[in-house]
Image (tube, rainbow, N blue to C red; front, side, top):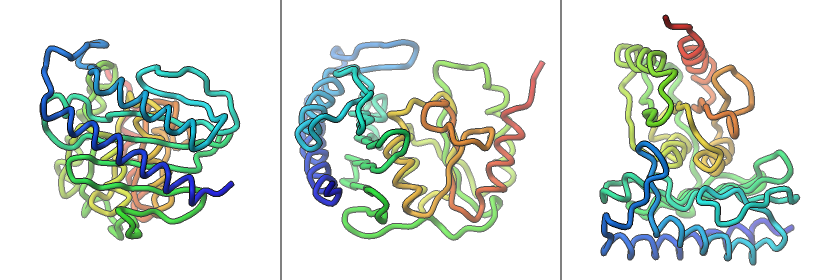
Length: 267
């Protein structure tokens, strides 16, 4: 399997779809928005972009399966499976606010082996494939060298459909207000992970995530020298709906803080 060829073709496809999304945003009308649930939206642009990605990736890697947010295709039991979010940050896209990203992960069996994130507003393409290094627009990237949470800039995402852990989540924010350089919330988990991978952020955490939100970024981050887990310290961050990510130097400290607070029971 020539993963360098797969990588280059996938990047070309993603940029092509990104150009379509940008063009559609210029004439975007709010009456095309469909609500999938409370604060959970989809547009005709999401659907058309996903169809284009599925069609193109099927040609790049024939016989592969798909896990796709908008349900364009529904089989995922092949040896290789793509995990796709055509627009991660749809709410940002609707309002014309950056960032919003195309996120693609590639899985062989149970193992992630590739990832591409294309952040459209900045024209930044992050990628890594099959044990290789991580790149941003062709330049190698690495996670930060920050060695204490107190010196870290941290990213997160706010819950918008499941609020059972809201008190715990607010407690994490309160902690980091006093014990870090600050907390940022961009509205695209894919972009958050990409920014940890290239050292702009030192750490990221969020719950109520889906596999298509994190698959591409998780692999890129690992190849850039970062670490990931779920809130319990396990490896179920892809389908477990919760993720902790950081550089390797603060990972133990950061994951312990998140784990201790998020597992608390509140009256």
